[in-house]
Structure formats: C-alpha cells, structure tokens
Length: 166
Image (tube, rainbow, N blue to C red):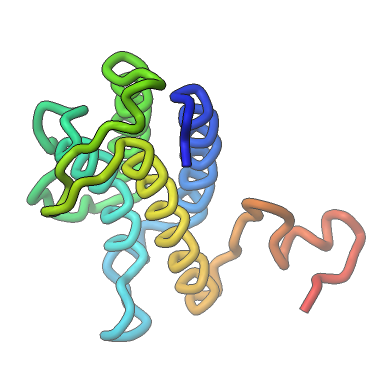
C-alpha cells in the first residue's frame, strides 16, 4: 500500500525499467507467435501491459482519455517500447502533478467498485509484474534468453562463474 506518492514513483520507475528490459529481449518475429491457443503471445502480453498504463489511469482520472484504447498490437517491439516509455513517463508525471499523499486514501470508481487511490497504484505495479512473469515463461518456451530482473537469470549465472540454480 502506498502512503506517499514518492514511494510509488520510485517503484514505478524501477519496474518500468524491468519491463523495458524484458521487452527489449524479444525480437519482432515473436509479435504474433503463440505457443498455445491457451496462452497469450508475447506481442499481445507486451501490448496489454502497455495499454494498461493508459487504461487504468484514465479510469482513475489521471489521463483525460485512454490514448491506446482499441489500438491494434504494433508490428514491432520498438513501437511497443516507444509507447510504453512515453505513457509510463507521462503517468509518473501525472501522479506527481494531480495527486497528493493525502489523496491516496480517497476512493475512485474503478470497474464498478470503489478503490482507494493507493490501491490503483499498487494494482498498476502488480498487474505489470504479473504479466511480465507470464512473458518470461513464454520467452523460455520460445528459447529466448530471459534477462535477470530481481536477480540473475539462468543465462546470467555463468557470467558470475557459477552454475545456474535449478
């Protein structure tokens, strides 16, 4: 739970960098490739993460409108990353400009429910982490090297002269 805007901004910037690290590890050939009909593809997951950066904050009154609503998945990860960078930075700026620490306990109607603003900020970060985790599994299924986020990935252990943990 966020009690200070500054704490959210710190976490948001760190998690945004982690997301970009994952996005940048994936080639454009994986934009529409799926490993199963029951699993979203990497392009769809990356675009879903990106669209949520405008969708949820628009519902919370931060963005005037959802700029990415109903826009198809771009043809390249570079375009997804450009949109993500733009709106991720804009979101951080809007939270700092429009909300105060005291406002974090106030409620906003989200999806037919009353959510406190601190819950919206937590949901944004948790949503991103959740789908980023899904992406790393799909990356493994495609034999794409996964960058370490909260510690070394399997491929990165060798750089430390150590065996990968199983």
